[in-house]
Figure 1 (cartoon, rainbow, N blue to C red):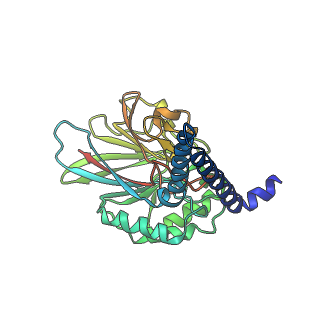
Figure 2: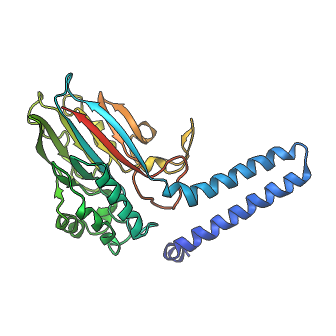
Figure 3: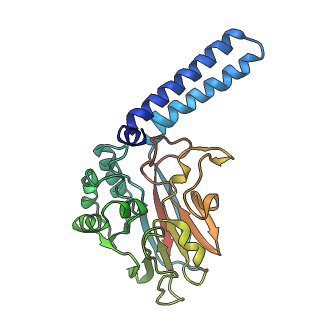
Amino acid sequence: MKEWIERHYERVFDAAIILLAAFLTLIAYLTYRAGGYWMVLSFLSSVGLFMLAHSIFFGPKRLTVTRYRERLVHHPGAWIRVVFLSDFHTGGFRDADWYERLAHEAQSLDPDVLFLGGDFCVDSLQHLDHLRPFERVTARLGRYFVLGNHDFLEDPVAIRDTVRSWGFVDLTNSGISLSKEGHYLQLTALDDHLFGSPIVPPFRASAELPHITIAHEPDGVMDMSSKDTDLYIAGHTHGGQVRLPVIGSLLPIPSKLGRRADCGRKMINGIRLLVSQGTGEADFRARLFCPPEIMVVEVGV
């Protein structure tokens, strides 16, 4: 039974959603007909039905661009624009047009640095080529990537080779010095925290030079201090995918940091941490108050 459900997951998911929607519709109708205090339940059922429809049909399509401006020195002489995308999950619930849209949007953001943060595929490599449009995206100071946990569950060697063939540099457990207008930035990337062998803390050539660390998971920041890096950028969490205002994620966050680093800008161990909500979905194709996200980080050096 379990194997059958896994093979027909999308159909099972669709059937479950239809049944849930039918149940909420029936409850809303019957309690509305009953009137009186039952109208409260009718209202709540209607709200639930609306949120269900929004999370399935509209939330996953509402691509957002979130911008941060991080000053790493007191008086920056230049600003380096890092465009970060993560958690693509090709082979899941997205078609090729979605990834074409992502690549087009990334190019329109005019990156100095383009960084792909892993989880390129899920379940199989069959649709990895949907990410090929990123081959055309240019970035003045280079294009880089690391793998995510789902990539290690498939074929990490094949995925590395494919992304490299698009002109991206694998920055796993290594670093590079970037320069703009005579000002320098050290960029280091870490291996996957779950299945790889991340070198933590990362190499930092000089404490005097601005330094950022990029990884798939945010958990690496737990083993670092403010002297190891100035800024840490990660994905992996998807922001929980289903959130409510004030309450936050309704689902467990798949990291040791949990809700402490579910999405957005955080401060962990004295380090500024930026966590992306990702661009795809895992386990189920729903997003509520947690749209897919491209992160743009203006780094002052």
